[in-house]
Image (tube, rainbow, N blue to C red; front, side, top):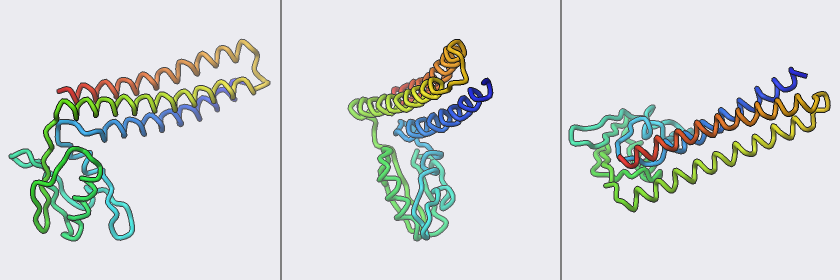
Length: 185
């Protein structure tokens, strides 16, 4: 009896962790008011038939004049990197480009841009909460269908499931609050 709940719980925790990471990654990709080497370095470029992270194709640094400098290991990849960074709409614009390097600056954060980004952050969070609710419904359904459990056990495990999902929703809300604070700073 206990074993079945532990199996359900283990699978759902894996699912919740995976979904939480997906939505935290989405939140981190929302443009902020700071240059992010990690974010840009983690973008993927189609290169020689495979998707590779920019950081494996180039070095990244912030110049003294607050530009993001991407120095490609192969000059053929510079236009690809520029396209990917611009296509991801992270708020960067190409300031200038050489054969081996591309220099990006951040567009100014206007009130309208900030409000739009905060709205996007809230939409991402709501989408994540929706996925968590679906997982929660699946937990309840699995418990309801388990004929080996007594009503008391089902209620107890359902409460544990409620708490489990709420903990993940709270973690997502914390990530949202952190992003909104970052956008407002």
